[in-house]
Structure formats: C-alpha cells, structure tokens
Amino acid sequence: MAEQSAGCIIVKHFNGTPHVLLAHAAGNWKLKLMGIPKGHVEADEDPKKAAVRETYEEVGIKPDILDYLGSVTTNQGKRVHGYIALMKSGDLDGKKATKLHRLEIDYAKFFPIEEAINMVYMYQRPLIQRAIEYIEREHLR
Image 1 (spheres, rainbow, N blue to C red):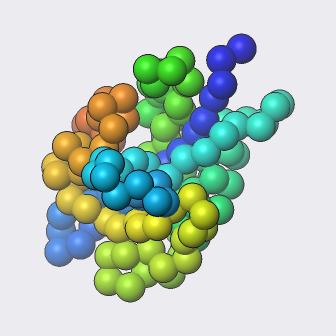
Image 2: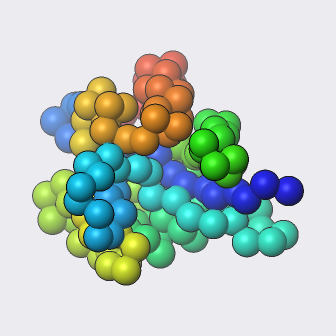
C-alpha cells in the first residue's frame, strides 16, 4: 500500500472572510510554498484520527472536523487525505499559530482562502478548492 498522510484544512473567519491555516516546513525558506498541517498515517490508524493528531502535533491547534474532502496524490505517489475543520482550540497571536513543532514547522498562519489556493503545493490545491466549494455550499460562517 502507498504511503498515506492526513491533514486538516482549518477554516476560521476574520472580518467575515474565510481564512485557512497554512504551515511552512522548517528550514527551507527558498521554497516559499506552504501546506496544510498534515502528517503520516500510522499502520492501522484511521486517517481522520491521524489528521486530528498530526494537526495538533504540528501547529498546536485542535481541529473540529466537519467533513472529508477526499484525497490527492503527490508526485511521489503518497496519498494525502484532507478534512475540512473548524478551530476547536489552540493558541493564536492574531492570525499566527504560536505552539509549533519547531523541528517540522517554522511558521503557521491563517490566510484568506482565495489567496491560500495559490500559496500551497500544487497537489494540495484541489483540497483547498474543495474547501472553498464546501464553505459556499454549506454557508459556513
């Protein structure tokens, strides 16, 4: 079976505009792209539970999952499961997450979702697009 990871597209509204939390992998600022907080799905672990665990481990935010957005595949063949979620708890300084797993993530912040789609890795863009569609369809506020 191909390697799998799972993560959350965490939505929070600021001044009525939906934002999503994006994280930057530690140590590589030459690569400007960011991504959703995500990580490895352990053997026999449910991807939804992995998404919650990895999101909290990486950025210190506990997500409240609303729905499954499907999966995408990286160029290396890894399957990435995405879940749309609201922020249940966690520490923020404005729009920045403050409890980061510094060995993996050096920066995490909420960005307007319409901007975020162009800030993430190409393979994650369909997940952000599905999140946009979900927000519109469900009138998520």
